[in-house]
Length: 335
Ligand code: GZL
Image (cartoon, rainbow, N blue to C red; front, side, top):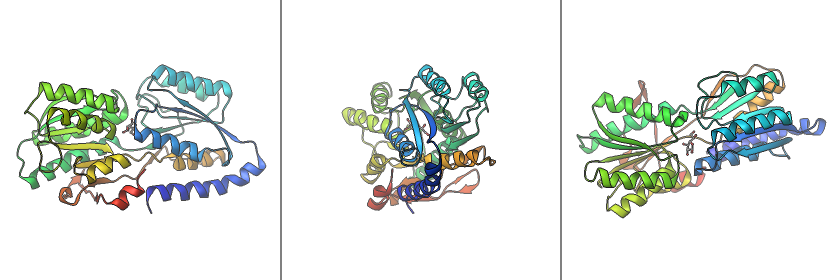
């Protein structure tokens, strides 16, 4: 069952469960402080929440797009406390600086659910639903080792375009990939942030093409939108990428447009980060409402994508990894 269908089924089931609540009670008030609107991934994440926490499903959603501004995000959370919402959802722009405002939520008796990125300096929240970003980074590194070996590529000279500095997605993906790079003695020439945006990816790649002309054979973009920008910059600089070309291009997120670039032979491997977490957040809220225990951490299921020729066997932490061949059907079913 593909992601969209699964999310719909879960949302539908939840809607049925909530309908009775809707018939009986006031809408459940939810405050959601979203990172921003920087990427296709973010758009899908926002839609997932707005689809699930809708008026028809018995919710009153206060949504704030914090535009990648940490101060605005804290302000949004405090506004939810003033509105006396029933639950607060936070996708934390960066992983630290949260204990004070989470203490205020706690004192106001408002449960907080963290979605997607993590909060690393406080545990004053009911649950977190998201991805293991370090696993994503490790998978990208171990895949690269297996693929390069299969291709007879002996030397790896990599450039990294990282995500928003200090976000757990950037920290995890960098830590994972760099751990593998060290293990195999690769040369990671440079790592600069593209802030998870297409413009950021293009700007960094333009600088890389000037500073490191002819010195690199791998580019790692920590999300698809950065990869789109990097491809524009490489096109303009006459650098070819994709299987059999100058550069192996690796990306994360595996959004629909990213998988289209895999199928077109531009991105060689795309490591998914699943944005459709809202149905699982709703399950947490329903359990909290029923006074039930909730898991502190809920991990999303994710896949690693490539074309047939780039499907190789590799392990992460001793566990064999499955890869998914990108086809039109896979693209159609993606978020
Ligand atoms: C990861 C998420 C990241 C995506 C980017 O879970 O926080 O932020 O990888 C998005 O596309 O900008």
